[in-house]
Image (cartoon, rainbow, N blue to C red):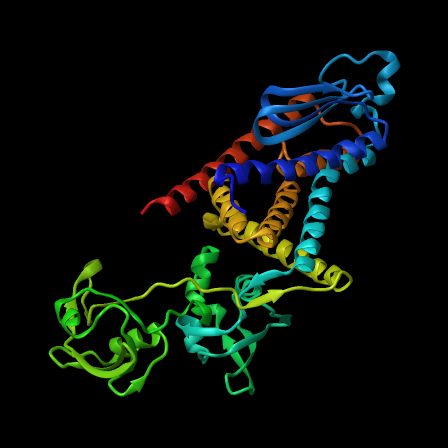
Length: 446
């Protein structure tokens, strides 16, 4: 599906979301009799321009990252007497509030519709089966082969569900119980001590501290390459490691863990391997590795890297998909609200992303197929709707704040107050964008 590349998918994604967002403002403004002067997708020099029979100028501009709806308003220019009834500023406050909230509302509606379409098509994903564990998961007794059933009170269907629910549950920094189905078919309850997590972690850091990793990402215990002379003499690329010092292994993570636990200076590690269909014994003496300023014993074996195929499909019938989509909207909004709360209360800005991350994620989603691209658009649309509701001047939420203040005061805010608010909003939004770009630059750096 990926034929555009990152920039192309970014422009397509932003174009779709901005179109729906601005159309929300447009259609509600028209419904209340406000004259829309211009409906613009993008900023800067117009590439396409047409005046409709309704008198609205429809424009597609050069810079595709945004858009706007320009309405008739006395605060911007003189309005003829006969058109005053069509001016935005002459409409009741409640109508102006609905016009402002219509853009984010259309983003939420679009997100729901895209999720419904995705679930009817079927979203490929990984089953929520645990591979190796570290950190809090190891402390909580999670075992390889555990299938996650519930995290707290929430049902888990896929590994994507699990990741989102784990991050959301970790925000409260309180212990959470996880219901699992063991590999032998029995059920058990594990516990994650989220109170041990430090503050100001981004999502990736939180998941790393939790230490639950999907079995599908477990690499088989197959030698990809050797990195020490001792290993090179005993092993070849393609050898499958069957046992380490008599302990059977199936995955490379198990192999690495046992080597780490049992390696001693000068004492050989006994390996049972399979090569060309034959079972062989081999020995490798561990060597000291001082990489990254530390010291550890290694035998110098790197895994054969493979890409895990999806082994699950999240698909519902048209009716059942309505409830599933509503539940997913709730989860996504809750996760985004939690992230924004942490940004403004803890300074946890690591989850802020710029158009750089959006572009690469859009391209990756497109490469995974139609369902994943639609899911990405849905998540992005919900995030855009929520961000626009923030009470920051220049955003829709800022306009809603102005209108609430107008209701309290009984009159519109002064031009000076509006100007100061616009400046503060620009500074705040610009600062958040700079942090997002900085985060992405760090992610791109080696």
